[in-house]
Image 1 (cartoon, helix red, strand yellow):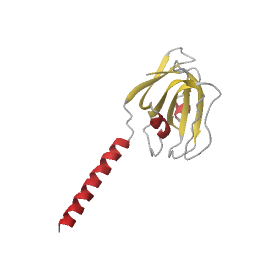
Image 2 (cartoon, rainbow, N blue to C red):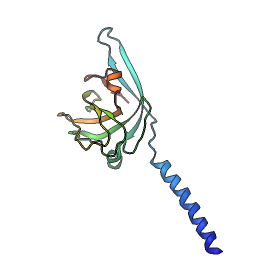
Image 3 (cartoon, helix red, strand yellow):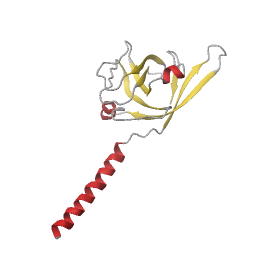
Image 4 (tube, rainbow, N blue to C red):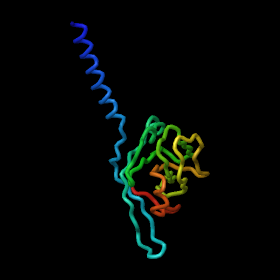
Length: 154
């Protein structure tokens, strides 16, 4: 009888622990960032507000958006590196198609790679040094007409 009670307690503890670990693992899109672009025809400044998760540590960089099954239209992940360098990404274990926006140390867009396919191990990179990478749902760049020369405000 004692063994059954202890086994039940152990199962309950393991269940609660698994829920806590899943909650910690969930990505939180809580940081407000803004993509800025100048209208070519009217010369006005256009802003696009985004909720972003920040990846700032090696373990966060490695995990990225792996295992994420969906994001809202204006959600994404901003990879923040300590300095500019050549950056290479891939889509291994990433379940959703993504647009990648490469930014320099001043947060100016210097490269864009659109519609990167889920689960691909193909290298995604540009031939310039970047300090920030913004990952968004595939199609975002086209829909909002994001271009090299636009910039980001954190």
